[in-house]
Length: 202
Image (tube, rainbow, N blue to C red; front, top):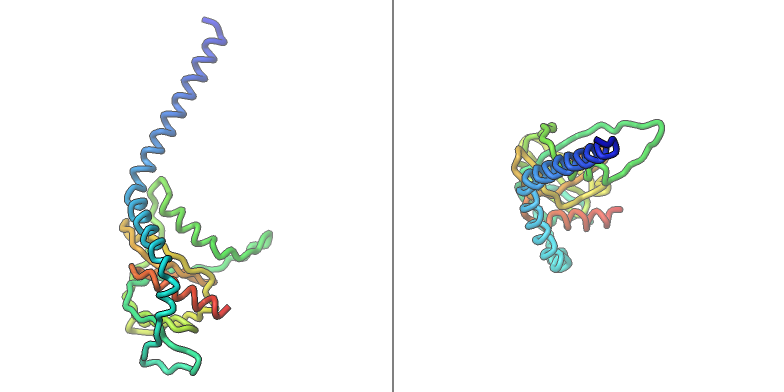
């Protein structure tokens, strides 16, 4: 048999094997991410619909009376009891290249939702907390202690699908310099309130 013919058969066989492997991986990917895609697509539609009335929602906000003593230029505009997950991380300095990319951690979280192979990342528990949002800060009360986040210290807030124990939950993702927080909620105005007041405090 001609050596060129044998080489051609080997190349075709290898090409066919690569196509088969790629096809199997693509099928596994589509099956694995079907639940996430369904929830995410529905969430994107809800967000798009909400965006049409977002300005009116923000304009209709009114100060809420609370037990906190506030300064004259501060008012609380949002109170709710939500499940919250915290993830603190250390800032590692890179001598070769130092940067503060506010979307870096957010993109890593998105990649977790779209990864092909299963892995078990560190999963923080959800804690029930009472959330207060004013035009200056966010206060979280878990019944034991208060956690205060100044709006000026927030780097990023986004709508997010949070994978908790294999269940996809709608959430608002918040990132500061040393932690990220997930507020599990269907209330879309939470993110827009934080974003709006955060821009005022920049």
